[in-house]
Amino acid sequence: MRRVLNLVLLSTALVLVGAAAAEDKPAPAPAQATATAVPAQAQASAAAPAPKPDKGDVAWLLVATALVLMMSVPALALFYGGMVRAKNALSVLMQVFVVFSLVTVLWFVYGYSLAFTEGNAFFGGLDRLFMRGAADPFAGEYAMGATFSKGVVIPEILFACFQATFAAITCCLILGAFAERARFAAVLVFIALWFTFAYVPIAHMVWFWPGPDAYTDAKLVDALNAKAGLIWQWGALDFAGGTVVHINAGVAGLVGAYMVGKRTGYGREALMPHNLTLTMIGASLLWFGWFGFNAGSALESGNTAALAFMNTFLATACAVLAWCAGEAMLKGKASMLGAASGAVAGLVAITPAAGNVGIAGAFVIGTAAGFVCLWGVNGLKRLLRADDSLDVFGVHAVGGILGALLTGVFASPDLGGPGFVEDWVTGKQGFSSVGEQLWVQLKAVLLTVVWSGVVAAVAYKIADIVVGLRVSEEEEREGLDTSSHGEAAYRF
Image (cartoon, rainbow, N blue to C red; front, top):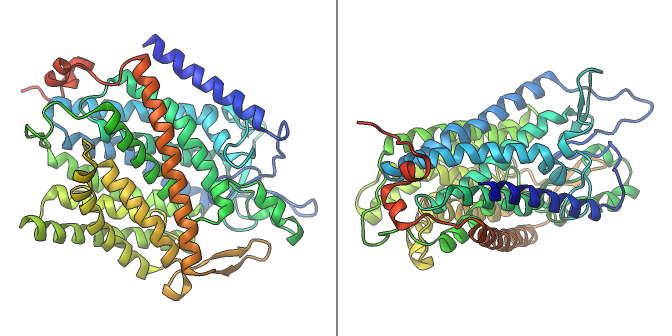
């Protein structure tokens, strides 16, 4: 375990040094902000008082942050824990709980700064290292960050907490792909590396921009856009994390399934879920918490949040029905596991689209997700020949890709969508064309797949060299609850 801690500290030091070298200037002005993803200091003119946060917006984002936290602990832990065998249930709960905590700490040490401050097109800088400068409680001074509306701000520390829950659950999602055979220390080494070199830069590329208040003159637009993350500059739409969270995690999970190897007995023994009641409870809590995930990403308590809430509600229900219908056609009966999986598939697919499409889009995206992800965990899984234990790739990557692409279609006002802001100086809404936006969405998907896959492969290899990726066959057959943690989920 000492080697694990040393490696985590070394990787942290390397990325901080690299980011410092990449900065064009020692410290960006505190007036930088992002609405989609980064409040830094909201700009205020010298003639006008600095805007103050609306209590309704703050209250909503506080609740949304707590809801997203609940999505990991306990919701995802229960969802995954019920799908493994009884002898490994506790190990899954433990991995989710500890990984969530690890990523939360790394986020506030350096992750937030590298994701959501100005740097280059791939990484931010070190302006918020250890959250420096975000709050001075003694003086009563709190940095404010922009939302999607000019002059509307929220406390930056609140935004940082909200985004911390996104980073943490993304890393926890990966765990399902290699459940029941990975060494606990290796999981921690891998997560620290992948979080640093995959999650953080992709979050920066997709969500970082200077914020609406920076766009005061048309002459400034090109220079301001050049400060944004690469995928933001392309114009890709990702409301709450189709690329950053789901495709990112799903691809890393598939790579892990290959590199960790198949479970002992896979294809020869029945590796059945031990408690679908836990899985159903977990899926239900995920659905509940996802309202914070998607509607909270509006960063304001207004119409966009209401649209995202509505679309999240509807698309999930459509996906449950579609998955159950597809399963009944394929296997002659629908299952509780299928219904729960359908709910998650719908939630995943609507994530990038939640505030970017109209209600008609939610009907289509949710229904398509149920059928497509059902194929992802059956036909596609057989083609890939990977033991993705809990179908992380088949649900999260496949659903995320579907949702990201269909966002480019149903964002069109001709199909009931809101379009997007074409001019942040005036706030003018518009839309290019379905074909053009679809191409932009596809580029974002491809970059995320390649980036996450390469980083994951390297991170798994390093973890394997340092501590070994998987437990011995004897430990695996005994069960990770006992062999890795000296405990048991159940005592009869």
